[in-house]
Image 1 (cartoon, rainbow, N blue to C red):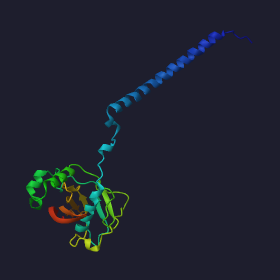
Image 2: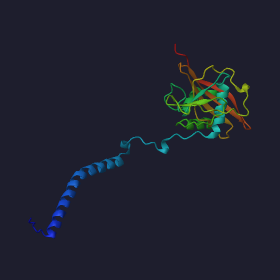
Image 3: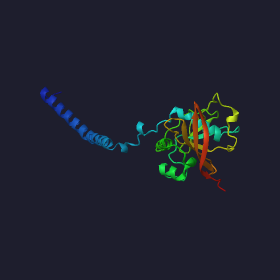
Image 4: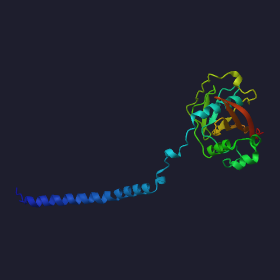
Length: 243
């Protein structure tokens, strides 16, 4: 059997050419894909919104300060709780409008026109209340009115199913509202407005029930020493049950 003698240099050159051809073929196949991926990455950088919604920390509502919950508790106990109340539902975010018919946050003209509490509200109290109703704040599980409660967000009950509201040490059955409605809808609150001396406070609370009835109240509180007391209430709106 005869074999042809091929110089080793020619064999090496041939292998090199074959390898180069294979590499070029792979590059022709992968370059379009790489170009597509690179283009997509650049587009996402240029338009972050195209990558889908991203919740930024600065977009999340700030939490309501802890010192305001004592006043919320007092309003709930005085205006809504009865011995039959077994669950309270509360909107997670504070309101920016004082009623279902209102389209904008309240302003000074709104208070001047309606002369709530006979127009005797201190200007700095109203100013603080208006400032805090310009945007929503997040309520946390810091209520202590003695009845289980659940938060509501976007019309849906949140989990966990029940947050317990521990009974405060100073709570007694006489604190329960004597004229409260037998059923409670979904309660919504504003932030608490304070005057500069922090001895007067103003809160809006709405009660929205599944049957379409409900009411909205402005509640005025005064502080003597460390004790807050409800001194007056204004009814802003009333909705009758749908027949």
